[in-house]
Length: 581
Image (cartoon, rainbow, N blue to C red; front, side):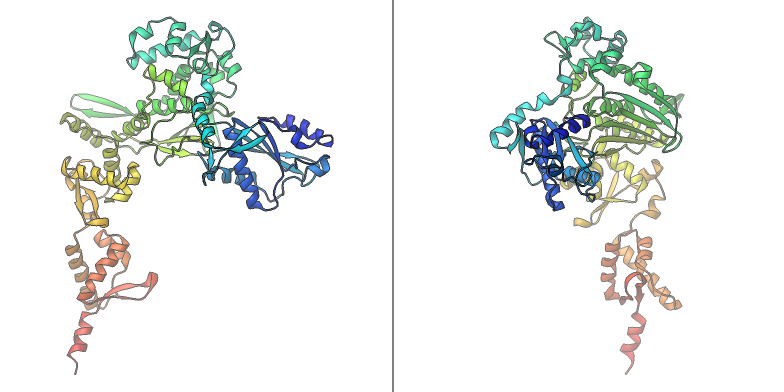
């Protein structure tokens, strides 16, 4: 990709040559169409083309068949918004492309140009309509079958961490990083024979040493500060202790603390976070068990994810913000390969930096089967805490942990179930945690919560009824619902009162509502609104409508419309009319 200074220098040559003569594999000039819709379509097509070709720069607002700056630079209209254009490209590409769009001021035309910087990623990219091109020389050619196959083969070549460092190996290494790496791997019971190897042999066994040169993956794992800063200038981490959303009271980063290599970075970040990670003590017989607000397993998985899956092409650090009531961990680079916060629990694994992840997996520090996210959720849920929130911000991924105390009753329940041979997975834990705060759930809500298909979720819920005996089931068809058994709700100290808050059976609900309406009619009081019936029965709005429909045979009618509508018992009035001659 081209820098602003380089583009400015090229623009001065437009008095001598056409813009087309300045184009290359990673540079194109395009005139901004008069129709905004066509402009967006052009930008999307060029983003796809450049991303498939390995990345590049597109200058928007320049005619490419004209000589003379004044004629060749009509510019970009004032109504064009770079942030909106970036969002339009993101929404219209698959996998998602997030270009950087910079403004360049010029004296000609509208006074500004857009520089669209497109990173090469994991091709093939297409528009959401399925169309795609790839950059070949100065042209964007159709992404035909053979080119698609070639791009699929070339996917591994886009791994930044697989690039060789053109320097002797020994001066690049950090003894402290390698020592810490061995300690971490030993804790995870990595193969002992591997850990006994010399530094260079260990790196060779991890496949981060190739042809006598260290890869950038090896540099991240075992490099010293100077070498990492020289060969990976975009890589950094920062920890900020926040007083408010805009003010921090304490800050540290990897270069200042000389802890850039991944093992040292992880150690430094954990130490800073744990300085304000309160402990909850729970008595269990003669023992006093201690639990952190941010569990160690969840914390390590989140930090390793951020350090392993960052986009090293973006000049942005792994950023940890520690607030009084929450912890945020973010890394540069959005989610790739169709992974979203709504499917991340069960999506097939896909690494942005495959060689780095492969090396760490050999030491058992990360998992290549997409179990890390599940472990992060499980570590929070088994202590009765809400799971982390994962946010895809297009150019970054952010994980948010709420600061919560451990629930003694929930933790004891998990321990007892484990002793009884009932091991709960993340799906079971998510449902139980949800039902502690909510009266009931249905298939759709539970499926969204657990990131499962409806059919899968129904099987899981039925399992929790029939095998685990945790839930009660009611209703039929689409109206089927599940709730915690009252005794389990009390044991886990859920919100509210188990019996009082739960939904009542249809026949009981009809009798209760009918009796209330009769009593109000006799006292001369107005009937009940939909909201009041919902409060009495625990039903939804639609379920109340069905209940009233069944009560119409019992002389219950709706009076009024909209928010003022009420259900009235009119039986006595109808009886008097029937008796009158």
